[in-house]
Length: 203
Image (cartoon, rainbow, N blue to C red; front, side, top):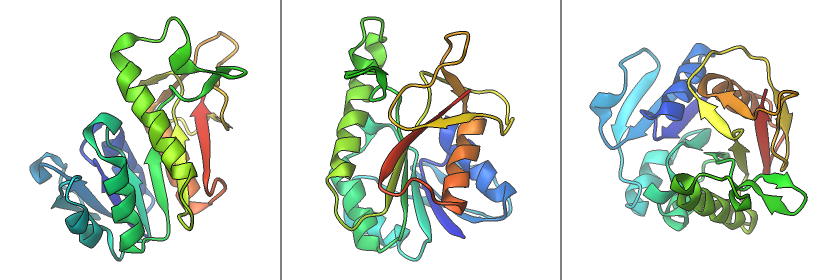
C-alpha cells in the first residue's frame, strides 16, 4: 500500500515508518524538516505544514491510508481531520494517548491522582481528539492508545490488545514499546479489525 505518515521523524513515527518499510509498503513521510527522515528505499520525505489544511489535503490525496503520529498540542484536530476527509483517503489511523483509557470503571487514567501533571494537557487534548473522531460520519478512523508507559524498546511481536480499558500485566505494570506499538498499528492497516473504534496495546 501507499501510506502517508504525518510526524514520521518522531519517536513513534520513525518506528511506524520502519515497520511499514519492513513489510513492503511505500511511505510518504510528512514532516516539518525532511532532512530529519532517515534515507531509505520505499520512503519519500515531504515537507508539510499541519496547520495548512488545503496543502495537507493535496499531500494526502492518492494514498491508501494516513497515519497521524503527532502531538495533540502541536496540531489542530479540526484542520487535520478536515484534510483527511477532503483528500478522499479511505483510512485514517491515529497514534493516541493512554490518558483517555479507563483506569477503573468510569475513571480515565488522566483523572487519577498520580497522573503526571506534565502530561495532563496533552492527554486531555488527546481525549478531545478521540471525542471529535467519534462524532465524524463517513470517516473510517482508528485510534490506537498505548499503555501508560510508552518507551523505546524491542520489537517482540508479542503483546495484548484491548479496547477502552488500560492494560496492565500481572506485575501491575502498564507499558508497551514504540516498536511493538508500530507492529500493532501496521497489523491493523493490513487486517482491519477496529474501524471507527479505539483500541489499545500492551504487554
